[in-house]
Image 1 (cartoon, rainbow, N blue to C red):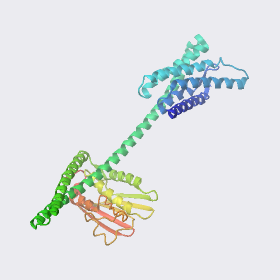
Image 2 (image 1 turned 90 degrees about the horizontal axis):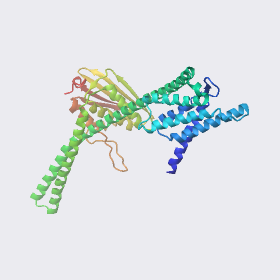
Image 3 (image 1 turned 60 degrees about the vertical axis):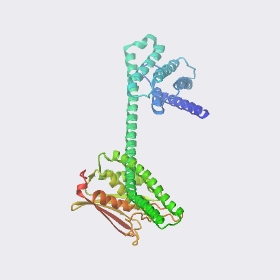
Image 4 (image 1 turned 90 degrees about the vertical axis):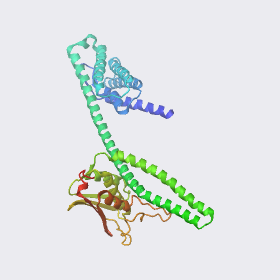
Amino acid sequence: MQESSITRQNRILLISVCVLIGAQINMNLFIDDFMVSIGILVIPVSFILMGRYPILPVTLLSAAGVLLSRVVTHWFRYESLNIRSYFPEMIFYLVYGLLFYSYCKKRENLLDQHSIPFLFFFDYFSNLTELILRLHQGAFTVKTQISILLVALSRALILWGILTVLTQYKFSLLKREHAQRYQRLLLLISKLNGEVLWMKKNTGLIEETMNSSYRLYNEMTRYQLPPELSRDALNVAKDIHEIKKEYALILRGLSDALDLNMNDEGMYLEDILMVLKNSLSLSCPDNKQLEMQLDIEENLYTRDHYFLMSILRNLFNNALEAAEDPLIVLTFRERQADESYLLEVEDNGPGIDPEDIDEIFSPGFSTKINYETGEVNRGLGLGIVQDMVETQWHGKVTVTSHPGQTIFRIQIPRKYWRGQSE
């Protein structure tokens, strides 16, 4: 509560000081002591920038501050105390602040372009009130009325300009935020898509393990081994069966959710690479620099963008994790090759050990092992990458590697591009 009160007081003081500073930028329009300044604009502009604030305290403090500053300035210039000449200007600030407070009190939202006519009227009426105190009937002459109408119109146009610029700026930020959210959604779906494929392959392994456990139970029973061992084998088979049922429910739910998102329009290759490039830039370690080079012959279009994003994201991440040099250079190439398109992902990493290169596509193979904890970080797995390419597109993936250069080549038939995927 105390912190909130301090913040409130600071805001009141800050806005009031800004009004006072703005009031010093002024000009005499057509009579002595009638000063037109930009100080009054601070009251609505602060409401636009900072949101709701205590308008009445700001109005009172600003009006008193402007009066005091005028009187002090006059005293320094003429060595005489003159409050009467500047008192109407204080009334101008009070009237404007009260009108603005009444208007904002009834509004749920902040100011917008529809507020400009009201702000124009507040400005005009406040100036008119000040001039009535100064000129009495003379405030209603044609010249005077035209003058204060022009002043009100000028300040209203300034407010309109500020509102327009801020609205465009907020719209630009909103578009950028939506674009970032969409990119994160694409990456999430592509990652889930890869995990679902992995889970589907593991479904067969679970079934096979359950059958093996049940066969073991039958064999142990037939050879009349100790009953407790047979029961353990049967319990294992039952537990695996329960796991299989829960696994199938989770897999079905994920598959249904992905089907809802994967039935949308496809993406162009350049857009897919841009999403991945932005993601890699964020995940690159602070002590390393990422340079990504794109060599695209034709900006291809595919409806299987989630599969392609999963594959490329895995290859890029593998290169990023394996990199040892401070400068990581990733190169992506796309070329037409007979009836196929050839995609290449090259990195400048340490390369793949010759003894591992024949095993990297084997299911479950991984070189990312924490020898302290025994944890294996498989990621999506190159086995799944190969399975995606071969199963989804009837394509082919190969690799060549030596220290300083590793190239993965993915060959996909032309019919699976440009939305012609079956």
